[in-house]
Amino acid sequence: MTTNRPVALVTGASSGIGKETALALVAAGFNVLGTSRDTSRVTPLDGVTFLDLDVANNASVSAAVQEVSERFGRIDILVNNAGVGSMGAAEETSVEHARSVFDTNVFGVMRMVNEVLPHMRAQRRGRIINISSVLGFLPQPYMAAYAASKHAIEGYTESLDHEVRDHGVRALIVEPAYTRTGFEANSAKPDTPLHAYAKQRQTVDRVMGQAVRNGDAPATVAKAIVAAATDPKPKLRYTAGPLAGRARILRRLAPAGVFDQQIRKTNQLAD
Image (cartoon, rainbow, N blue to C red; front, side, top):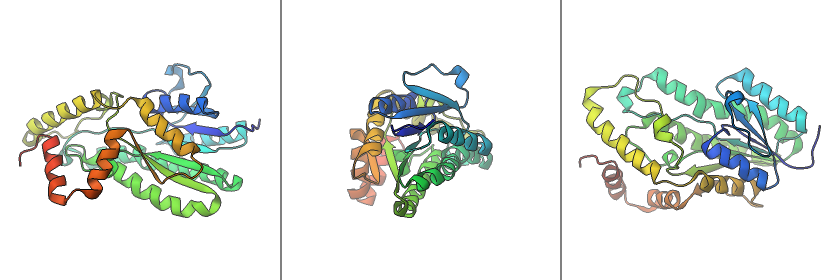
């Protein structure tokens, strides 16, 4: 079938930021398709149609995007929200583990973009909204692999945006700060733990856990995503919540020494 209502495809929509985004886009007037790796375990959401999708699998990505196109005849918004966390010192993180993080957080985004872009170019409109993080522009000790994946998304999206504007498409970035999603509890732990880092890693884990518990509600991030999807003149970057906004200003304006000291203080690292 075809529809006159805009169509949004949201990856990782079964919980947290993705779930709140799907519901917020429904409220904003979109036909919304949410994805999960196993929809049989997903609690239904009013107004959201769920599809099975593993962003780390080429065939799964192709099949899901084709189903959306055949069902609705259009794809107006792609929200690349699916992602995985990773904790641990850089030396404790094997290349194999880092590759698995990138396969979802970076290459999963690229797979989705490559499948959706032909549809958006053909209709001469569309927005690709990639969920980054404040760790896309800040360092985070004991989360090097994850921060690297989000830094990669920042560079990829900004470059992509320049390429697709001539075709009526925009690529945009949403940058949440700490969000109450259970992120730290669900993040992968180091696969080659070393005693040399154990004490400080545990300290940073506690700091991160407290920050997440005191963080923004997922609905705060969803609000920024809806703005990116609907603003008549969209910005390249949307910070989600006051902490993310302050972090962006700090990174831009603080002297290097002050910024470095603040990162160490926040993570309770010795001077």
